[in-house]
Image (cartoon, rainbow over all chains, first blue to last red):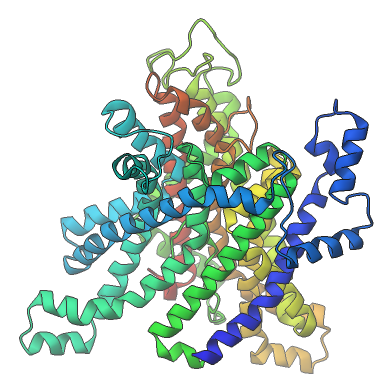
Length: 314
Length: 305
């Protein structure tokens, strides 16, 4: 296991380097002058020149990169040009709602997906299975923002049960907090639930056909015990893989969900920064998201190696 | 695997074995392919939806009952009825006409971005797989780096610097989908170059570019076609998402995503502004996915779900 961790960590280094280079290059991809893109034409030339100097855009590009990387290595991701605060500070203020949303969505998806997936596999090709398959189809192909608007239409506008926007911290006001996060979490969790359901169903069907299941049944175990004790455990590995593969989807989905429900999270921060053409903030936040994404993938890889020892030696 | 735009569209079946060379006459092979594709239960529905969407996209100027951009401030938020089948929006534009024109934008975004990704990705994969060594290392690390960003976030960032609008969206999505094809093609090339006929061509003294073009590329296309057909639906979803966020196709142009975004403020009074384009988007994406599944089943029975 130690060797696996080391090997994966070493393999991550060049990718991280390329990612930082890519994020650095982002600002230079703007057609024309990035300063003109960031500020209205009417802005005074001296103000523009000051910003250009602040961002180091008046330096040759290799110097810019060296300075930028140097700061990065000291943990300085730059400053927003709108509120002048460090990127880290901007993210720190916004991370809470995002993490709460992600955790809540994950819980909802698991709570929905496990019973549905297990039921579908145990009652394969029955009406129950067909209904579940249709549900999964909706979850997979329905874009996030449509699910969100359907939920808002149903529970917010028509039934008026739940708030349709805004955020209350569940750690300060538990009931209102959970209510404010419920619709966003369902939005984000449903797509994930659909994918987990499909994966669990097919991996369980595969496990159900194994010899050890026949043996378990032959020795007289009830179907429930066969599934709990023998099938489910072996069917979990593909589910973990799929959870890992869905991370990117989850982050993208969070951006849209936070936007629709006006949650002040990191996803919303990205969209706002893009709208404000606050490129240093865009760069910093995107870099943080990418690094977070790489590290989570690394974690899933290691988790996978831990669950299935055969993988460690490949 | 089905997945979503969104991450798992990017999960590539990397280690597909190279396809064996069949010797049956081409016509018979094509017929068998078609039959297998149609046998998939949902394929006819998918094909019908896709053909309909294509027809609507091409014939948009003829089919749209009204000018998609023409405002009628005396008739805003009108309910669906005989004069406006899908109602009108907040500035009195006909929703049906806008959905019809939106079909064109969605399909262009889906097909063009995936075509770009297919061509660029396949070429990169071919070069990396065939020439190997440092080129391989460099190209594939670059692809890894692109894959290190959540797809929608990368598309957002690229869209932001390239500027909103169709061109920005196309390039952004093209970049996002390129690594999938590069990895897939590289895997194919590695499998194929180990085969005897490539060795034979080499022994006969054929130059590298000729072997790559004549022997490797044609035999590596099947999984690429499968991946491309599955990616189109996700690219359409991605375009809709970007336009929904206001960072894709800009108003007043009719794009399903931007229509839905504009209509969300009127969910209570006029839900049809959202549900017209929403239904079109959902049905098109499902239909294209069924076609993709059918293509996969036809070209590679081993991958059948």
